[in-house]
Length: 83
Image (cartoon, rainbow, N blue to C red; front, side, top):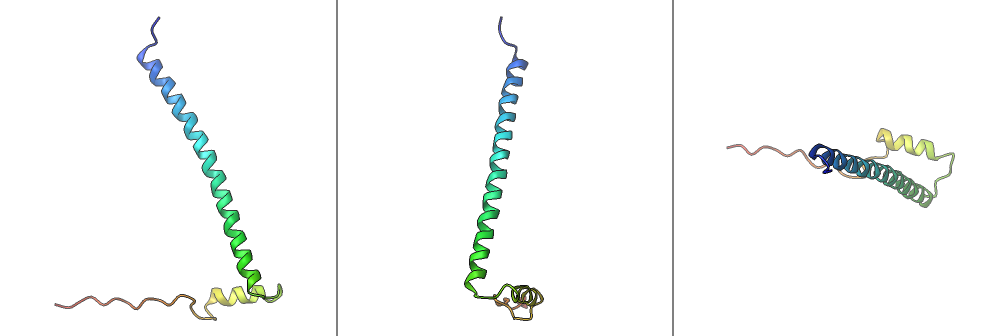
């Protein structure tokens, strides 16, 4: 007995769904690894600054508020050419 066209399509759909589920799990794992790597980089940077643990919150708050200035200069507003 031959497999119907709709049964073949349904089987293919199930294979694709399984692959999607597998890829979503892989993506979630990679996102977690990326987050961990970023956190490690942040810790390394902070440790390299030789800032005490008691001073760190104040320093971060000052940076957030802009009290320490811009680490990356803002680009000047581009003026539109007049004709």
